[in-house]
Length: 234
Image 1 (tube, rainbow, N blue to C red):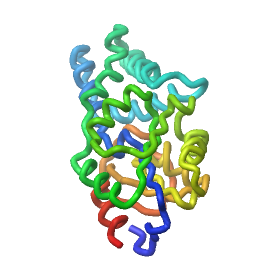
Image 2: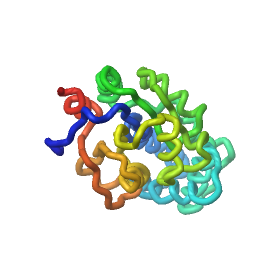
Image 3: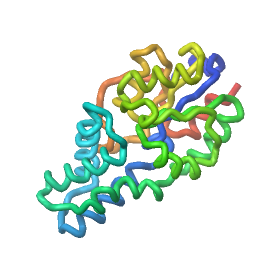
Image 4: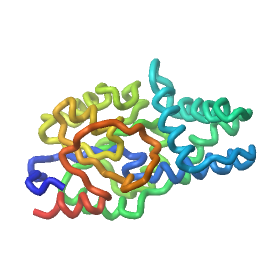
């Protein structure tokens, strides 16, 4: 934690959703454990997450496709890599499983505290209808939601951050971006001069669903609750 960091200069906090607010790794593992068990494929949770962290960015590269299609392609990548077949229903099942993905235990209370002081935005690599399932679980009303579907590209593309700034109509110095992914969020935001908070939910884990890259956030916290503690302290 940077003890000298001045939170008072920010009007808006923007959040990545999956991995930051929603426990997507638990959701991803729940889907693939069941799928792979039916195929008698015995691989560890770490292997599943490491494979996912490679397949998803590959499928998001190139011409934009809806996230439902990206996730279906990721399922097919697993099937090809592990040498089994999947039906169309199984391929679409990962996106459908988002219905049941839950917020981290610290998320809702932390967002409520933050919303008492800041305007809150979402910047997420997701389709609008899929995020609607998660928004209901987050409970806090967001003042702005920008999805990959609306922009037509996926983070780490700078277009997503540029669109967010255009929607908020504020100088970038008034925005603080909060995310778990160094690859999708912290790195590109920092390259644009946007201040960042890294919600480091890895905390000693050896594998993650997001690519591991080098990026230096302005602030590092372990949870949204910890962010609320420092951001609402004064």
